[in-house]
Image (cartoon, rainbow, N blue to C red; front, side, top):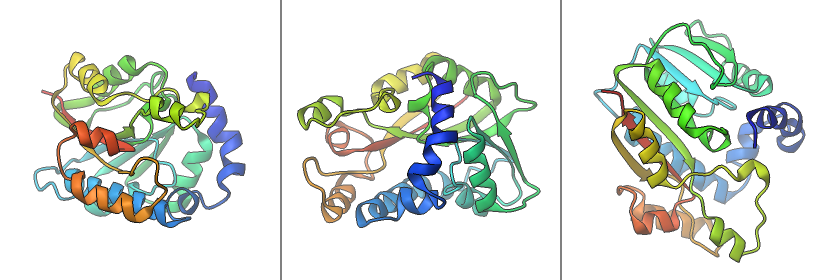
Length: 245
């Protein structure tokens, strides 16, 4: 799907689908979603918020949504300057509404592949965006170009389970056809120059069950380990950490 179609979806279709409270509908509407929220927060805490070495002054977040994770980053790095970049004006408006006025936060409406940044960053953060970008290699090159030397990145993306979805006869819309396997994303990041690239599970689900308890249990079993065979089997989403030399 082209980036312009993603933009149109979030500007025009998303408001009717998610209503006024995007964060609630996305993360808190039922117990399974709440488990997913807790698992995502745990991953961000372990790899970002609790990292004593990480102390950026300039942060780029791509696709802040309703600022669900931005609020945690702002609390952790209160003196940093944030650029929140999104292709959708509607999502930026929701971010702005969630955060309120903050002198440290700048909102940028742009397709990241066409964006001309005015500076560089020490940390890049993104949750569930790369799967919607049509040119993944160009995206990785862009992130590499805007990070300073020794700058670090953290992104979360959806785990492709296309064969499982076909087995269950769950049709995927065009919007969800851009998911990348961890090995492919890792190789793409390394091919543009990133080092220290590692993948970890984020949200975990027990296949064929619709059970918050099972998801929570499988997350406790595999969630803290580097992403391996069993992690890929149960992970609904995963995160990647990386560094620019």
